[in-house]
Image (cartoon, rainbow, N blue to C red; front, side):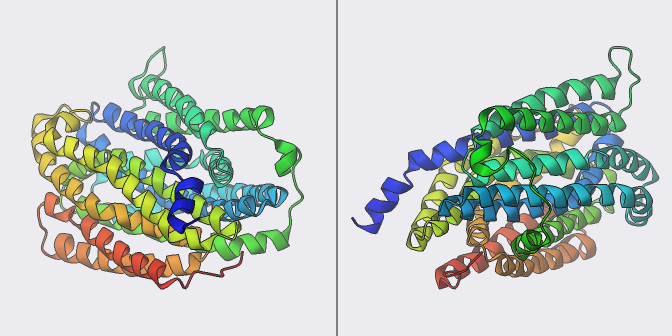
Length: 449
């Protein structure tokens, strides 16, 4: 059997889609959560919608510490699942969960003291500072729920049992819409809390999501097979092995989102209107991003499983298949958004001038995604090989280029906000080149976990 026939049989488009589409559905639901927050706050005022951009990205910087760690654990779970070492996959889940619970408690305590100081230094508008701090204080309280949920997602993606993700995200979406509507606008006798209500609502929705995962796992997952029927003992030895992979993904994701936060800080210093535009673009970008990341996440776990099965020869053809699938789904979305930009922007705001000012940035964003698609597929494939240290170094190159570009275009030249969003294309092009060259070099072969 030729390699082409084998890749078509073992990783057919149908099988890839079967794993990817539940991830896509879950990401759609999660993106709708962000859309709900932005759409609700867009009807409260420009200060609130602008503050939610900065506060949301600031929170994501913090959250990425836990999410990045869980992505590394997901790679290990995928490798163990491919090897058939199912109880070791469960052991990785437990040790990762213990670490993230401790990290959540530590960050929550530290944020109450540090966040006002940090945000006071980096935000120039007093109104946006007050609103942003209100959001962050309530949102960080839900880290213990968010980090725990991230570990459940890592387990289900790593073991290719992705069906549950779409169900969980639907439950979370419904909860978030209800909680936000009640708390932002003050329904059923509750006070209208505005941006604080959005944060509280999202935190409560994450709690509902975690409860769902616990109940679903106990009833529908083969807990004995994976050793999830009873908590494992904390093991420093296993934790150390997790850190050899997850430590790099944790740092990489933290730095990556921190750099994006820097982008929004540059924008914030150009004016409240530019920040409001960028928050809307950030939310719209998430609609495209979710399609791409469904296949990028699938790429990472399938690469990890394939290497665990000893089929390193199938990795590059598999990456090619996932790249083609990504373009097939992403390009029609880009075309639709480019053809009807005002219709898309109206989802987020009903302010006429803000709609007009946002359209050019949306066109720039759509063009940049033609480069972002290969960037994310190649990067996730690199991470899936288990060589997360190299993946960290490769993205470091892209982030340096990205930050320098932002400093020149936004900080120094103070270009229009639409031009500022071309930074996404610069980042995508750099990532696609460096990660593509690494995969082609085959230096990742033989990496043990």
